[in-house]
Amino acid sequence: MRMHNFLKLFKGEMVRLVKYNILQVSFAVTVLWLLVIFLIGKEQAPVFVPLFIFMDAAVMTIMLIGAGLFYEKQENTIKTLMITPSGYAAILSSKLLAAVYLALQSTVIISVFAYFLFDVAVRFVALYGFIIIITLAHASIGYVFAARAKDFNGLIAMVGMYMVLFAFPSIFFALGALPETFDYLLFISPTHASLRLVNYGFAESVPLWQLGLGFLYLVVLTVVLMVFMVAPKYAETAIRE
Image (cartoon, rainbow, N blue to C red):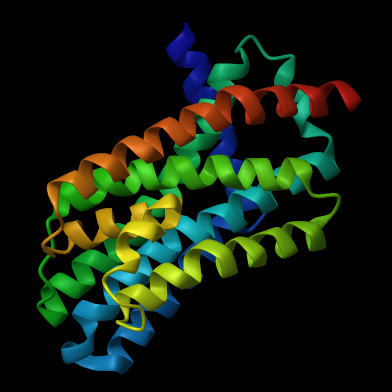
């Protein structure tokens, strides 16, 4: 019975992704990445493909999940969900699973494209496994931003600030604009931990301690945000509706 209810919740999430054009936007961004890969050519593909997947799983996840929550607020669907037989955990889990689907859809398409057409080395199992935890962490961040933002412009501002503080430094490091000494300092950022995991998925040599620390960091971050910030705020929003 619980599994049946959960599957119904997940199906509902997928329907909302289509209704709010989130699934379509995600696919369009994936096509854009593919066009850019084609334009930069085989020589530069190994450098930029990991960055594109990193951006999609991290920044795009925050943006799309945050946008989805805003649409739910506008249509007052949160309170409707709360009166279903399923509890908070099942509702939020279905939303996280939908976020993982979006990220994996893009990752699978881009990685297969890069592997077969541009000879980019890919550790498929490791990459897809890491993308799941990266997405869970950044979906949680997206929900926190959406819950705290007063309007959609506020959400955009938060995402922009997050990119400046956390995403851009890691991207500059990946492109060689920052020295190796910054690698340790940047690990305070969940995006940098995510980037190192993605790099390993593309057969780059990444120290074992960075893989372990990065994975643990994202797991703990996801649990802390979901339990202490996302779930209480979600319930509070439902009550206000």
